[in-house]
Amino acid sequence: MSFSEFVVLLLIYSGLLIFFLVPFSKQEQSKDRYQGQISFSSIFKENLVKMIFHKKAVLALVLFVFVLISIHAGFEGAEWHYNAHSGYPPISNKLPALYSMGSIVIYTGVLLLSLGYMRTLQSMKSVK
Image (cartoon, rainbow, N blue to C red; front, side):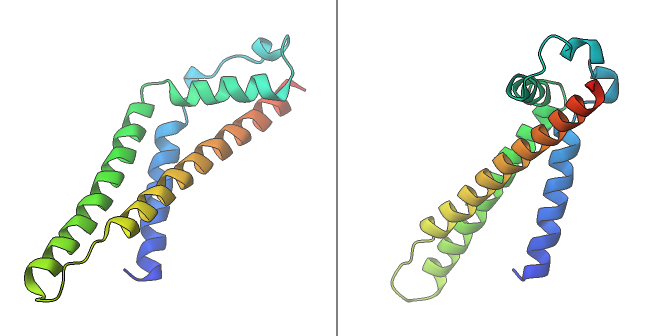
């Protein structure tokens, strides 16, 4: 896969994940809720909980699992095809598959934390 194809797939994945993780505006709480707790960490934790535990987040989880299964199936199929048709000694694609799946897990975690950080900054800005 070329670099441009990888970037396009990453942009589509990021856009869908952001859409699924950001709650609708009608589910937002009022500004009065944050008057008693102004600490950054408590608002950050509350925003992460709001992002993870709402209805659309189930679709984000489905997307995440689908991507991991697709990566595993792609590497597994390539390994089987090479071993079945090449005539060379068998190879194993388990390590590159684990690297790819691990990088997706890390990227998703960083994206989730950055979304929570941005929402926390927005919440704290609107309170002041």
